[in-house]
Length: 322
Figure 1 (cartoon, rainbow, N blue to C red):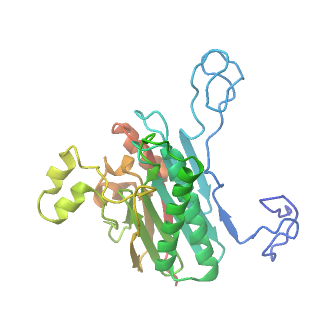
Figure 2: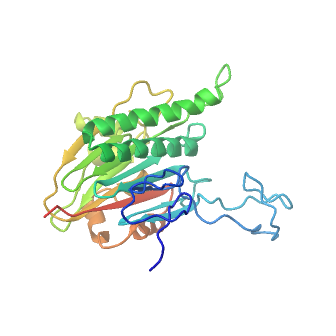
């Protein structure tokens, strides 16, 4: 039988160990890498074949920009899986995902979409996702109140994004829009799921017993639809449809997520996604046929429909405790 090893330092561990004696790693917790999972790095220039690629993904010989390791990311952790893709039109992938599980306790997953008009959007989204998932995993360990944990997770995300500005202050007169992103997350235990969101990234519940959209977009358009000023069709086609009314960023002020908790009575799947998917498949019934598929198929659908934006999909299965 293969010897179990610590995922941090690779020292031998026993099945009953909760912590690695060598490095102290909590063996009950597994999560995506800090800084985000990445795809394979470019080994040589796609134009001239030189192996000399700098830290900005440019070939030092011919100057050709290389595909980034973030352009296409696929990651699976137990039953949870996610895919993030640059799409066909964007210069870079500014979406981020983070997820993890605590053995015998539950799963936490986060998707953040960097606001393209802001500075360092990809850094903002990854910092927010990493900060939030750590808070949620700790809440699972401590069996803390899940709705308060979601509020705390967003507060941690806000602080992490604000630190990007603290560490590199904007010059007098402004260098641009402060780093910012959207946020959507799910915290799943054996019996409940808590959803939290800020912005227009979405969560869906997909099940053979019935699917539904769980979140409401924090956008100018959604607000006017709720007030009866616009129809959904008018809102979708308005040029201001994606203007955010709430977001995470140093310029966002005090932000608290919208939060909801539900207790599904049938097996199903929680889907977290950026607007790169729901721009093309907005309704639950549009997503229902893809339920048996992995996140790759959801991303493929968005790419085939045009892929105008970054696309991120994370799937978290749920089965009620018997």
